Length: 244
Image (tube, rainbow, N blue to C red; front, side):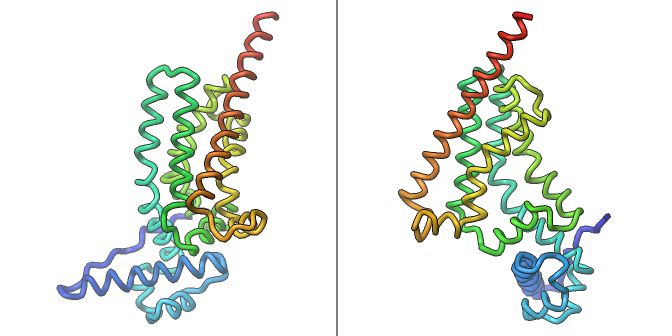
């Protein structure tokens, strides 16, 4: 499905700020309703009413519901992609330098720390979490998934899978490489997406301060154990091949 980029209408002098405010209100309302009800369950009329604007205003800025949804995706990507750019670039520099296993592990840990920082220390609205949880589960429209994959998931996945692949001695796109990567990353994602369940199990009211430090330390320690186990597996495989 091809969806045009939502129109960013110019406004007459004095009206530009009001136009931007209206557009932002619609996007925030759409994020909330799409997160709660999904793409099919939220109508343009509901979104307009939630934003306190009339339905023609929504059509004016976004054309249709697909345009509103795409604007939500672009809004999140604009806030997220830049956050990880430095960490991805630093990891790529390590990969380009014929690194040792320890350097690869440190690069992975840096990326994971950046992800943890974003998930738990940035002021991410609950509406974003619901919206992204649906996207992660594959419940959003296909055109949005493709865009999110290209701008957000692919850069992180590409550099992380290259690190894991080298530690395993397998190609970055090998299914085993990707599965092991996703399994490691799932440690953080599960605490983020099922935060209420985690808080109840831990009898915590929030994940911050010393509690966040403890969580990140344990996940980091577990990740290092798993990454070093990959090296051992790789070396054992090499020895077996030499004996044949």
